[in-house]
Length: 143
Image (cartoon, rainbow, N blue to C red; front, side, top):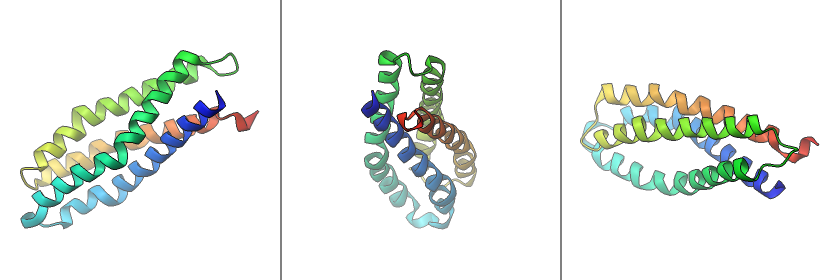
């Protein structure tokens, strides 16, 4: 169980760091790329980001689900299920809002779509931050 908790915390904290970087640095810089090079830039962003976040998101999701299935009496089922619920909201936001927004930006830079991407991504930023705090709280080092 300790290994599972450590994997869960590591993947969650990794994604929390990535999302803060994306929110404060990467997404805002989209507007500085320039219209002529934006489509190529966005295509590379989509391709490369998948390699950075895909494995961690799958590990985090698998670990969160495993915690719900295999939790022990020394863990709070409420906190475990709350963590999974927060992750479900992250994934919903990702696939309902961010992915379609990125796909639309593959056609060219759109200031309104870009602004929506930055604004809507705050939800994921907050949710992953709360998840990271929760994952760290669940670690056995607090015993």
